[in-house]
Image (tube, rainbow, N blue to C red; front, top):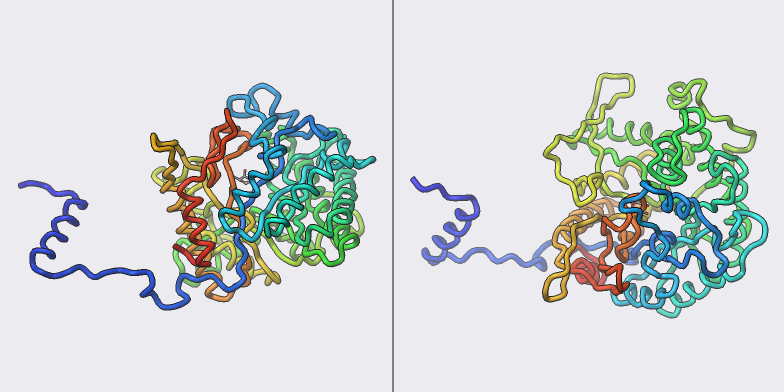
Amino acid sequence: MTEITRRQFGKVAAATAALAGVSLPEFSPAQLPPGNRQFPPGFVWGCATAAYQIEGGVHEGGRGASVWDVFSHKPGKTFNGDTGDVADDSYHRYKEDVQLLKNLGVGAYRMSIAWPRIFPNGTGQPNQAGLDYYKRVLDELQQNGITPYVTLFHWDLPAALPGGWQSRATALAFADYAGYVARQLSDRVRHFMTTNEFACFTDLSYQTGQFAPGLRLPAAQVNQVRHHGILAHGLGVQAIRANAPAAEVGLAENATVCVPVIEDRANMEAARRATREESAPFLTTLLEGAYPDSYLRREGANAPHVEPGDMKAIGSRLDFVGLNVYAPTYVRADESARGYAKVPYPASYPHMASPWVYLGPECIYWAVRNVCEIWNPRAVFITENGCSAADVVTAAGRIEDIDRVMYLRNHLANLQRAAAEGFPVKGYFLWSLLDNFEWADGYSKRFGIHYVDFKTERRIPKLSAEWYRKVIAGNAVV
Ligand code: FCB
């Protein structure tokens, strides 16, 4: 008996049907019910980047050192000893990068400002040359019809600030910096995000030591670092509003995305509870204006020291919540007091090129839904979503990143579900416009929809860029 594979079976079935004179049904996307794949009118399409990951030019224009300059230059801290010294050289090539955005047809660009370009010492005298650089970038965007969404802190903390996020003074310094930038740039920028991903610049940086400054502190000190992070955000919101009253203010946060293992009532309820618990020291606290009791109980004597007025600032009203979404955390209902349990990934669970980018595209739907159902924000943006892939340039000079297209297409289909169900998701920023310095992974992981040859700095659009252009043009999943 000959065995046939499933693929062969498909071919046999098609051939049999053709022989029998039966034509296979034709499928055309246009036949789908109207609205099935469409995003709402006015949906914002964009790409995201961050200063240290793309700019290079670390000694130019009076820029001070950041903790990532110091950390990446220490032996053994990043893959291959890679640093952001040159990165994508976007400091010099920003006009070319704006053209990449324009060719995609995006309406928006999420970029970050390097604090040490504006205040080389973290506080004190601002640096005009640094500010002028961003004015040039913003003017270039404006001339090309692209709206900037600006993150004020994407991890490049000025190295000169004593104690970094261990010091409360850093939160105050951030507020001064945020207020100054808002005042100077409010004629060019309407959308500001305070911070990017608390857990990365607190836990990964001060608890596990994987990120700059690479410390491993005990729990009480880590909780204090976290507190200073969310305090910086809150004081930052106040400072931005005081200096740019028309600004829309939010943040970009990688809240754990809790996905019910089965979409039934008990597991969905568990995923909601888990969302609140897993983000306890960060998103939960700032959207509720108080640390959850369960968190304070759990941390006991290690809980953060809070000064009068802190919680009011931390709970400042936001115009939007930005969510960075990459991978699911599956949860199920559980008898425990918490009411949920996290289900570990089996060894066979698929992931993209970065081991942490587990595949589970419904996570983007649940990210939006859980956050909206728990906290009812006025608006939600996906401020990052994307994946790494093992891209290669073919002999024909192409990058056929069908795995990235698969990842993105499935995420967008699930985001479209959230929009169609009426959740207030207003826009999507793809991470990333171009391959760049991926923190501790250096240049070993490529997240861009434009390939960057790091020897020549040449940019080449990948298949995913072509695909994204069509998504944007049709305002629909394609
Ligand atoms: C996020 C970061 C971003 C980038 C992507 C891949 O956690 O915000 O800078 O590194 O992951």
